[in-house]
Amino acid sequence: MKSDQKGLAMLIVPITIAIIGLLGTGAMAALDHEKNLAKEREAQRAADIEFVQNKLADYFTQNLNYPAQKNESISGWDILESSLGDLPDDPLKNKGWSYVYWSDGQSYTLRYMLEKTLEEQIVFGY
Image (tube, rainbow, N blue to C red; front, side, top):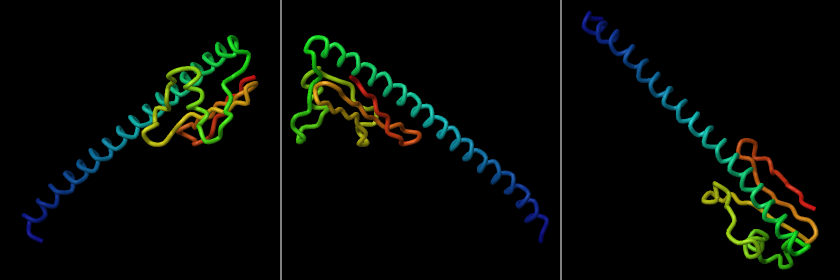
């Protein structure tokens, strides 16, 4: 091997390692950013569900029942919005995520998914 080739190889190796390091750092930063966004969305979900629970409590105080889902062809959330007005949507609604409501008029359930674990959370109201 000529000395020119050895010098070139000695130059390429550190440059390659530096490029790989920069790409790895960028990937880690993007992953951390996505984790932070997911935490923010989880906090938003908790706040949204608390907001809906408060609206349901007010509704029950005035009507002595909860909005009931009498027609299975209409989503419970749509029934809830027609009774309570505009309600928040899941932060990932554009990706198919949603809140779910069901009630027989005397009790209710609110359901939503946790992003990190994909576990369903169920909130009961009586």
